[in-house]
Image (spheres, rainbow, N blue to C red):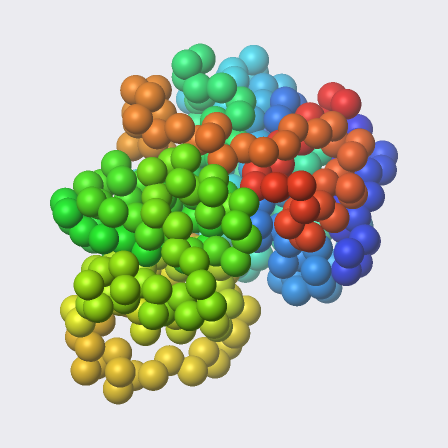
Length: 350
């Protein structure tokens, strides 16, 4: 089969790779019909990966058809159309059985908590992908949910919903969303569904702010974003900030921008092991701060219901659909934020 592999910083390529095989009696093999490129894939692309490996398939968002299952798998069968969540757990421990795979008791190597981070768990930007513990890590996809929506439900939409849920958004809140990539745009939708009266959208790129307006947000512009957020909220700041970038600057903006008693939820991936959080300011402002990695499986029942009902529109954040053979160009475009790029879908059959 063909797969999009990581060769080094800013160097990815579509090459022939070995077909995946069943990992064990709990696993499955899925033929990928659609894959996605996630913002967190750019960390690897830009050389800030999670291991020193090269030559492995990238990607952790996929929809496809089950081709084979291990003998211990009973609720997933060949021929089933499935969603492959980006988060990976086991099928044995209590947290994973409840969908909270980020709290897996049996995952001794956190690199195995997501596909496409290293050679030990190859990713889904390929013709097929091997799935460990299929009963936890595959979700049957209703026919009402398109492949395109399914890709957003594999990571971006659940991460956004998780961030909004942990921010405890209440009816009437004003919510600032910082970073308007696919996760940020899904956070705009999530906040409004949860009852936010206003969503203030922050991003350096005007085309991303414009896309957020189409989803119901109010764009925040100007060189001093903190001042603009205060001005838009009568000098007080928003009740909630959802940070969807992961840089020191954007996390600090979220902490400083919210009002007294405000709530900050960080879902952007940070590589800083020593973030300089100003504890005195946080204490004086009586802030609530949440950060973590989403267990996609836990959030999916709610999001599938919202999507099938038409209240959540994951497809609205898609900007490009490209063949897998154009994968290298897709990564370049995504990293450079060119051509109004938001979410890129890849077709492994082309």
